[in-house]
Length: 356
Ligand code: NAP
Ligand code: GDP
Image (cartoon, rainbow, N blue to C red):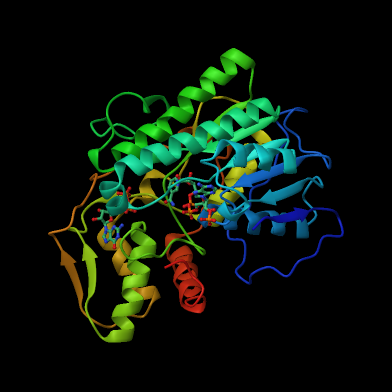
């Protein structure tokens, strides 16, 4: 269901106990058009998901500290309307009249879900994105930020990948449908700008993890999947099974860091071109290192097994955050060790209600 935050100087809210690990000092370099005012309404699609909940947390923190402009935030879930349906999407825009939209809603899944359901990943995302983008145009939204992913880049490429390389070749076959659907967001951002002068842009996060993730064993991304599997192995005294060889490399961003960078993007980034929101290249980890961190955070004492009959997917997708660093050279990302401990603790504490 919709949750909304009316932010004013008196705003007080009991937030979750985990501290903000990294702070962005907001600048107003983007000028008057981008500065939020107390009459603005920022609508977040996918507000009940991994990033949406992190964004809600960051917005509440900023409101509590009095660093907001007094804008209203609306966080949507699929219960507020199916964004694959045009009429339902229009009804949402009529109801909330957003001035800014952060479009996070998507059919999302890990490697194994993407390999099994290419048609669904393509069609649902294309339809949903088309509805949201056209409504943003029709309802004269001042700024739209949509969400791409580093997994949509070409499979055969040089590294590190950067924002200019999205359309340079076919994506990895494992997420063919999802990748092409997501790439069309970038195409349409350019088209809406050229035809109608729309202020649409996109962010490109790497793999994300944190509280409120999707912990489904078969369909989730690697971190929530492994946290859940480790939990079961610990409870039942069975081996902790990692799929694949453990050698693939990934960059992981903590969801609340990403949320802070999305708020920064909303207030400061003024270009149609995508911007990669990623930790530094040096922070890239192997799946084996990830598994070892989860073992430590969950205090798992049992056997760890690699099931090499399962796919490794793309070996790596090392992304450059040079563009982000040109704006925020000193941004301090939450360490993986700290973030993974929060994610593991959150899952254990919220086991009954977690998505799993
Ligand atoms: P998530 O946790 O799976 O949440 C998905 C959100 O989308 C939920 O709020 C869900 O609502 C909503 N949604 C899905 N289908 C919908 C529909 N037909 N109509 C309305 N709402 C719908 O996803 P996430 O991990 O936060 O991902 C957010 C964005 O980041 C996505 O665009 C994804 O492609 C991108 N991304 C994710 C990762 C990652 O590692 N997770 C990496 C790179 C990019 P309900 O809760 O009601 O189902
Ligand atoms: P990707 O980054 O888009 O490939 O998606 P994932 O987040 O699903 O990560 C996939 C990588 O993690 C592959 O190398 C998998 O072999 C490996 N992996 C190991 N165990 C698991 C698991 O339990 N679930 C998932 N999704 N991936 C796993």
